[in-house]
Length: 494
Image (tube, rainbow, N blue to C red; front, side, top):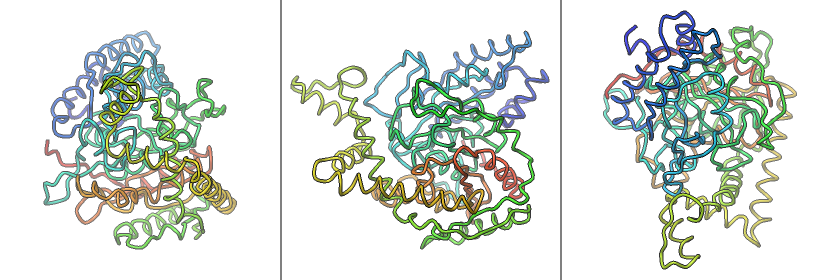
């Protein structure tokens, strides 16, 4: 097989080829290493390439396979979002303030992947501390979407905060990638790059060893080429972890067993509040098309109401910054990371280290968060936002009495140009309008590439499920994937 044949494989295709001895883990890793060397100077998807480590892990994988001891992911070449601590490998969360930090420990999610035999190609670019919807807040510069609008050479955003993960999967620079989602950071980049992304139920994947943004919202998940690949990855990533008090002590099902099941009789809700003003026709039409696909597969369609949806973004942009301001207080120039001495006083070290270490968007969110938690404003903002959050969760509870899953668009538009919304934070925050409700309620959501806009850019549909019912999302996601028959790939310009 040629190198491009190898990198073009799906994760399932690669695992089958490895099992049938048609390819070795070393050949697979080398093909990806070569592809990264060519593409990364243009896409900036990887902030750290680890070719030596990848080949070492691949050789160990080939040895295990030769002994008949291969794990479920043995030999699979993956990219890791730079939010996950990787033992002995620099982990920065896209921020200057963490500097050249090399963790002496491994995140649980990545430890699970290595346990199952996966190979690490490197660390993927991301918005600083996962705060952003376009991967433009990274200390390492923006990621460039491998997709281009037809007839244009303008660089586009791959979405954020997991822009590096989405771009790397879309450009065949890894077989799959870890990502994280606090308000849409797996699903929106997946929609912008024609990939599949699932944010599982809160607590399904351990948060141990993942740099915290907003602890009650953050959740790890995979970005992959197909629904099946996402199911394979999530099975390895998930699992109870005693080191994370929010980790759910539940069994991890074989998510692939839900693929190919008949969706006949499943009730699908279409929330009327998601038909927002100014939604592009192409997004609305694709949503209607998605409804038709599910109807044709035997699903029952029902219009439902989630009345508190309109308050989701304001509530999210109070709760998430509040938690961020608390979580990021540990970055003070004292124990690790960047230290600016200033005039040498303790206060000056704190102030200078944070002023130079944090980017503008992170500073903005820390300031918002500190303000809404301050005396005199706590009740008016933070407490009220928490009450709204409960109402949003109650809306979902009520709707899931009547339906089994919800179908919505993933994002209000296709990928936009880099630089387009940097000066308008509110326009940037509106990217999360369809995704934040899922995080606020702790529910699972999956984005499936389902069509292209007039410029040939991918558009995604989102399915939202009951807590711990990722299985139904994989069943329905498979149906949408098959019906959409999305085969488009970005044309190689790098």
